[in-house]
Length: 269
Image (tube, rainbow, N blue to C red; front, side):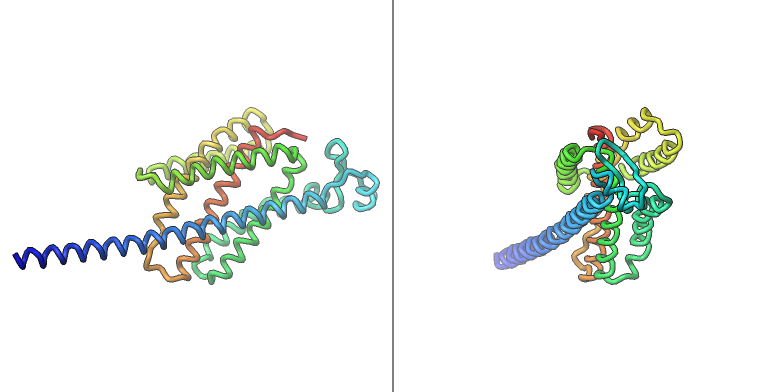
């Protein structure tokens, strides 16, 4: 009888210790995921502010002011919309290619160098990337109305939140989606490059529809992968770098989903 009691006590102690350890892991995981989402959200705010600020200084409604700022050159891009000298440099000169490709370069830089950087340096590089992305995306204010941009942004935010929540809470293993989604992503990139030269509206529509499906899937898939990257034994430095790379992945999913939905539902100026 005394042996039975000792065994029961040992099992109870083991169960309590297991519960306590699980509680510590759950708390650590919540803190880790919260940091990922906070970094992503701040990155989106930086992108939005830079995009708005750039568009504000790149476009004017006064043709005489545009001519004065652009050295006598007037470029009208829409009803009561004229490019300033900044707008001409960003959108109508070879500099536009640097503006377009700079965010891609920063993604590769972060992906290959993050393990050799300090957490503070990696976080600074992420903010720089977000600002460059804002500079690149500022052109959407020349193409789409502000109201439709805001509407699509909130649609994207609601969709992203639901998809990311599914990826975080589902018990289903989504790793099998990886190869399919990667193939879809490669297809979208190739089709987008081709469409730069042929400018087909039908192809653009197909790219946008498929892109919404691919990036919706990637949002759930990446969220689960980021969650599984968490390890309670990681040092603060390693955990910080994982959070930054996780934020970068979700940031890219959000931006691409937003751009695909904007192509489908945005009202053009």
